[in-house]
Length: 400
Image (cartoon, rainbow, N blue to C red; front, side, top):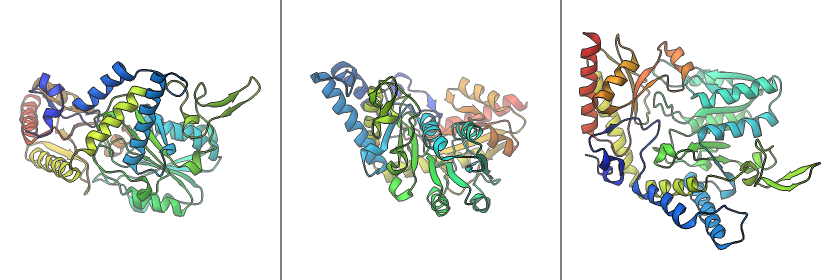
């Protein structure tokens, strides 16, 4: 049994559950739930606008949370952290506030074939609006990005490179530091989708030298509907806000409006204050753990699950990159992934099935989808044995 499991109340209510859908969302530790309850029962007020004591207290909690997030990604200043609803909104914000400003006809945006839809569709939309062209790095059969192809795509026309740090569908850890350096040599801005990396890899935006880094709280033991975007101030200080309303303004007249400085110019409306407090608690929870031991535990689960799945007749593991986060995707020969998922659920094992919001990747791999098991700190070898037993049972039923 995982030594971390007791920190998560859901498993006290559902002790027999095997939850292997962590790439979709993680369970929440008591410390995060407590922070949310405390905010709503002791500190609840709107931020920035009130002069009363409760609003001042809420504002302090809100801005201290921003400072914690800035430290988590090693941003040089908290003003470079913009609150979002999650990674999807973060990428959309970059696409419409920065991309729409700098892109023009003939310019190019480089993504990859393995991207989540949230790192494809916004760039398609902006390219259609601006006349820019979208290019995609090929994925090799083992699930790694073709770096030679990436090199060939870079040119003076490349204005933006936007890639996943970790593939949500395959678990591939991309060499983003090296890819960022290559993009910089061509003068391109770099955007990193960190949704799947933030729970497993210590993020240092200054070491990576990226211009934007988006991630979500709910993937890293925090609340849903909350995320953050690191945005380099030199690129975004004068960028056009992508949403208008209260909070993001400096002065409004019927004839003209002037906008706040970063980060507030990109935070229209009442923010998810409790979400920020909960995200801070999630980061503090992660920071309380021994990062080396957590990585060792998660990588052990990945290796063990992969080896055990490969021992099951008819199972094909999809994605065999040399560097992977704790995600393993697979199929049973002759069976539909959804049927496998339902049969696993009947045996108390929760996995994700489908295209994982990565339809271009599935098309490249010539498969409709996969069964995906993704691991977190509260998972254990016992969970994997239950997964394997479930897969063997599913195969027996589906292929008999």
